[in-house]
Image (cartoon, rainbow, N blue to C red; front, side, top):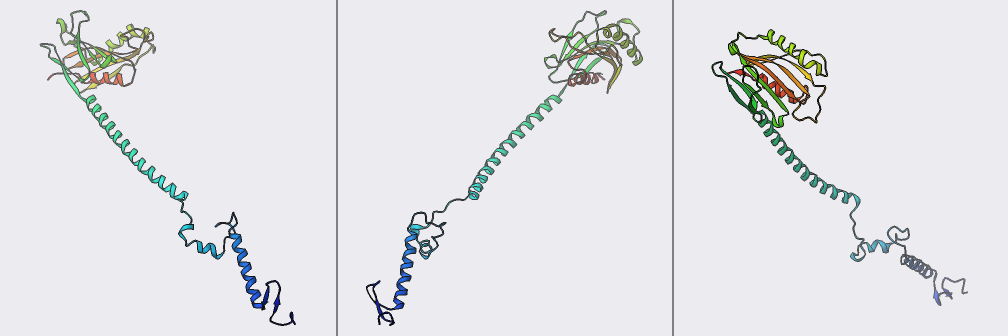
Length: 278
């Protein structure tokens, strides 16, 4: 019987085959079908069909090995390294600039700190000395005052601060004048009240004192209410007073563009440096 025997004729395969042969042929047909799927477009490493043995074998072949790519982390690291070197270069440049700026500042500070001793010879009464910054100038003037006392001016660069001195000494011009601190305070108060308060912003004043190693004095500060920058060689701030250095004394006007700023303080430091030469 054809269908009842283990060995029979199967027209599907054109010959006589047994059951094991049929099963083997069925497995080969299934395997061929799977291989055909691998050749279809769209099947790749991420495709669920591309998980068979052929794909795994192809990983060992140089011709089909995927080309390696640099990930974002690798690219970021390279960029960070480049930026690090660039930042180091910039930091070194900034440090060099900072060092040069400090050197220039120290040099300027040293120059600004240099003082020059200037002497004003008064003859028999002695010599009045003053310490001026190296870039200040001393100018002898003549204001046409009675008995022609010596008069000088100290000028800061561009005349931002100007100090005018009229110099006297004890017994000047055959008089018995020898004002002490109380006398100077009274004289300064009278002059300010009569001459400067009417044109001042403050309309009042407080007498102030100053001292140095070889000098003492009194002064008052006034702000000119009518000052205008249009008028040349005029100053809005005035400190007027008197000083004494040994037997030498006199009056002074300190003119500047600030009431209590660096210009005024520079001028006051000059006044505090006055002394009679030993």
